[in-house]
Each structure stands twice: as C-alpha cells, then as structure tokens.
Image 1 (tube, rainbow, N blue to C red):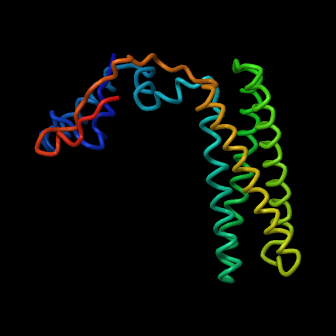
Image 2 (cartoon, rainbow, N blue to C red):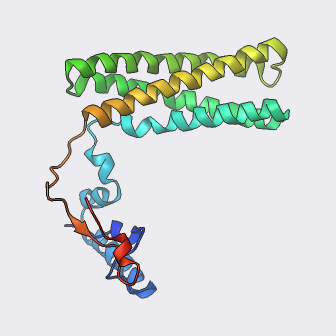
Length: 217
C-alpha cells in the first residue's frame, strides 16, 4: 500500500493544489490510509531513509557534530562576554555531545567492518576512524575536566581548556570531511537508482512564474 505523503510539504507547490480544503483532504486521506495499512507501511512513509540504511551511523553522526559545535560557540562567547551562565549551558552541550559521540563512534566502527569498500576507500576509512576516536577521547577529557572544575576555570587553566576545545572542533571538522568524502566521492554504503541519461522535466506550479521554475536535470 502506498501513501502520497511528502508532496504535502512541497516547497513550490504543484499544479494540482487548490488551497486549504484540498490540503486538509490530503491529510485526512493520509491518516485514513495509515489506519487501514500495517506497521511496515507506516514506517516506510514516515522514515523511509532510516529503513533504507544499512547502518545507523549516518543518523547518529549529526548529534555530536551539533552538540560539540554549539558547545564551542557558546563557551567561547561566554568567555568573551564574561557570561558564566552561557558557559554553564555550553557545558551541557559538551556533555550531550560526549554521550552521543560514543554510540556514533561504535556504529561507525561496526560500519567499517561490515560495509563493502575498495582498498582506496579503506585507507580513508581508517583515517576517518582514528580521527573519530580522537574526537571522543578529546571530548571525554574536556567533559571530565569541566565536571571537576565546574565554572571555576580561570587564567592559564581556562586558556588550555579553550585550546583543547578548539582542537576538538578542528579534529571534528576533518573527521566529518572524510566521512562526507567517502559517501559523496566513492558512494560508500550508498545504493543509488539509475538516472536516465535524457533526464527528466518537471514544473513547480502554474501561472506566470512557471516558465522560470521549469528546468532540466
């Protein structure tokens, strides 16, 4: 059973849209279809990307990146603006990043041993793996230091802490870059459908602006 769900969130809209009534009708039809389907159909519509994954690492990796980035920005701003409350909140971001980094690294390690890849990719993957473990190691040190010192970091100690935080973000950036490189350059763990060489043509609605939106792929 297939359900037409995602077109409801079309950025440009489409030629079949006729306002709020049709949108509400589409929602009602969607939920009615969900009620009459099975659990597999439901998750296939709601989380199709997750069900297509061979490993959960691509899902988890966003969390430590977001948390560590927020930590560094907020902590640096707290030091510059002399706002202890900002640094306290930054500490929470650091703790969350460290907690989510552990399953992310473990899932990545599992993926490296189960996902098929070439000898060239293997070299990149090992470098990515070493950097990822380094990120977790640095985060663990910063977390332990922050819990022990609290908001009492001052002077030279605070300078070392900030330098270590900058190193964490630097290593994290290189780690993420290699991860993206393996996926987008070599297609690691990606199963892409064939695209017709002739491309396809579609429009994003009718009206005087339609001509500007028509394009070829």
